[in-house]
Length: 79
Image 1 (cartoon, one colour):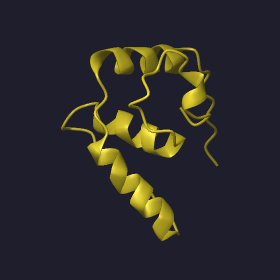
Image 2 (image 1 turned 90 degrees about the horizontal axis):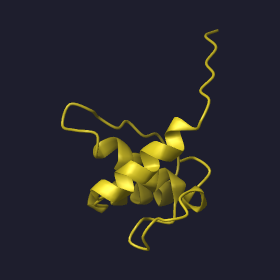
Image 3 (image 1 turned 135 degrees about the vertical axis):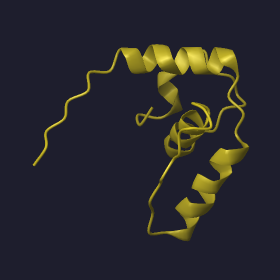
Image 4 (image 1 turned 90 degrees about the vertical axis):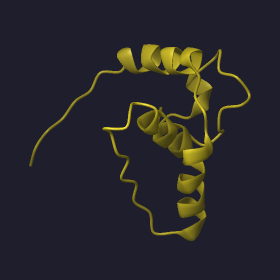
């Protein structure tokens, strides 16, 4: 998702064009027991982040995003 919406070739035009907003909308769509905790230093990005709450991702959107995420190798190192 962080690469932007261009990684979702079949995405509808209703999806946000900003990767951060799409990522937050996806997190919010995961259920009521999941909370997004974005951080920013600029009002511009705060407004963008708040806009994610109004993005409605449908079942097909979520399915496509999940398919893209399944192809991403996650690497984590602690300290």
